Amino acid sequence: DRRVPRHGAGERVHDRAALAVAEDDRAAVGGDGHRHHGGRAGEDPDPLASAQAPHLGGVGVAVEHDHRVAVAEHPDPVPGPGEVLVQLAASGLCHSDEHLMTGDLPFELPIIGGHEGAGIVKEVGAEVSWLKPGDHVVFGFIPSCGRCPSCSTGHQNLCDLGAIIMAGTQLDGTYRRRARGQNIGVMALVGTFSQYGTVPEASIVKIDDDLPLSRACLL
Figure (tube, rainbow, N blue to C red):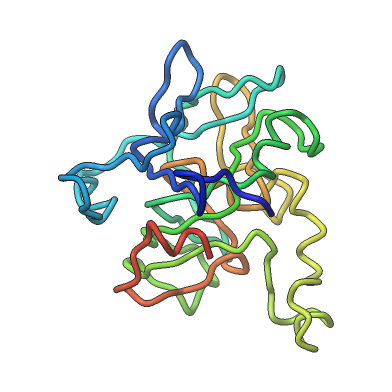
């Protein structure tokens, strides 16, 4: 995937503060091409350091039916069996997200975009045995169940669960987010342009706690 360049090279990163900005009901996600975070120039603080208070709901950047991009508030998604609730710290912006907004990728709308992200586990659903609250994780936009014929023979990129990444739903065909009287899907099972995400454990990779989440989101 090609990514939007920052300062002429590299990749642009948007943290959760940038994702929550709206102007005229449209998202202004890093329009100046710079990282959006607190602190002095040159610092790279933990994007979640000031987000320890209890939360009442989530904010996601959703692509609407008319392909406008709008900020939508929704109740916190609750993880189901085999799912993990993650507080997003940062998300990459890929050219595939542009294709989502223009309609070149045929997802059902409305949908929360983003398929590259990193964050901290807040809650785990039933049947999740290897992740716990506080774990630092990154998302994979192609899931890997570890059990299907492809995964068991070292071809995780062909995992059977990958057949559903264009549906916008969870693996069980349902939705975890609802706003303005309608279901809101997620891109590639993850939807990283959001403050919180309920993600299948098959789409999560645990990382070391000392890795900066603002960098790890690009993995």
